[in-house]
Length: 89
Image 1: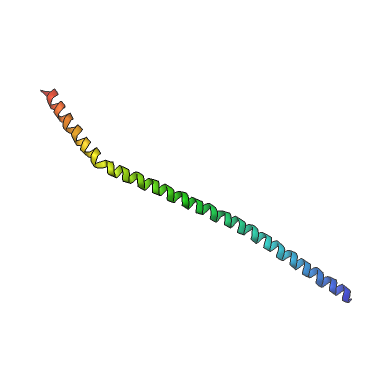
Image 2 (image 1 turned 90 degrees about the vertical axis):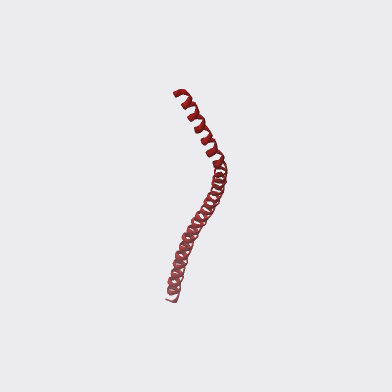
């Protein structure tokens, strides 16, 4: 009788250990997935910041060229008006 109860207690403990081990394995797998997601998000942030720096550099370059382009546009418009006026005569 004592032996039987000891076996039951032992079986219950083994079942509890197995249950805890399975829960731990599931949690470890979830942590691994979460860790991979975090790494992927960190890489995405890194790439986004690099792209933002590239875009800022392009904006600066374009803004720097804009006054010269506007002046060239005015020159071309003056030339066109002059040629157009001469053609009308």
